[in-house]
Image (cartoon, rainbow, N blue to C red; front, side, top):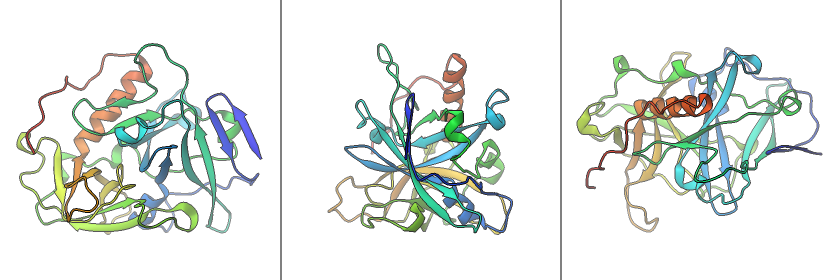
Length: 278
């Protein structure tokens, strides 16, 4: 059935909403999979992940904030943006549903999303109508505390994992992303010389933009350290075994922009600075 509400279309079978617990027996990678979603427009596809942002005035005290690459949102035009998400069932499985987000009409150059001034990363708060949220939540095991801090800085050679939807594989059961890994290949990290980025020695493909990068440790809480923004060579035919990721500070700054936009405050991120030559 189709539910038509302002700016949001839910295309799904009517199912009882069971919810998913991030405190269950899932490991870190499985929690990250439940937090990562495919995003599609009529002109492109990418990966997105959700961070639950604290908001006492929102249902449940949180608002899902979707992160992805700017370039896929720029292909939307008048929309829609299709978010493939999962409805958990009582048996621990998942049914796939589609959430169609139609951008609200705005005046001037104002967009429904914010973008970081220096990087190909965007985010927006997804205000789900109560009628839809009661049957189909957007599960995520990530919140502000999931973002890596300076005390857990990355080091060269450290293995990181990322989740994406490469177009080389048409689809997966349950619309879950594919897990891959690589080692941090650039130095220094987390300093002004790093310019908010780092390299991973791993192949990425169209559709992987927006993939969350995390440390797959033996603990129970995801440690989000970055987001994939591009491969070193933009041409798919060129050999490239390196991916470019922004670090956790850039994600944190983008989240601050979302909060400022929601509260109609001045941005907390400095104005764009010249990018270093590649």
